[in-house]
Image 1 (cartoon, rainbow, N blue to C red):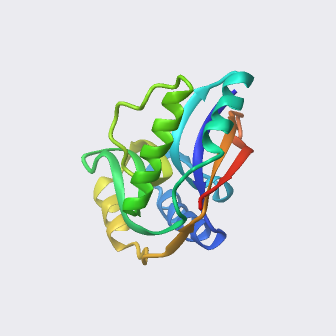
Image 2 (image 1 turned 60 degrees about the vertical axis):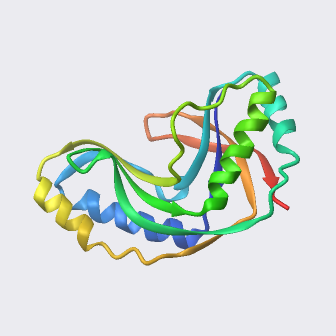
Length: 181
């Protein structure tokens, strides 16, 4: 089963990010896939395909997260890998505590046999995966003109979710919810 660990976002933030996403999509200067409003989240860790036994182990590992709930903020809009070669458009997620949470999760996963991720963690909320930018100056102008005021998020739990890929996009289902202290 294809799985990941996430922070789910409040409706008002998902709506705001979706409006930005729609503005980029409707501009006609890029093509790609855009995340639906209901699927906008922050991925803490993509786990890939896990067996039922592994899912149970992950649930047990996440059941006692010794980290207090915390606040984070949405931040700037950015790109992976760079502005010159855009493949992903994202919104920054600003909080030192989310980095600590990610580290705690990695340590707990390692104890159940899931290797730590090798890449650095950059907390972000993906809203588009880009195949082609047909008008880069227009695209960059749209992004620079976007008003994404900082919005506060209270992070008090994380989710273990499964992702079923379909022709209409992924369908997510929560397998477990784990509260912070």
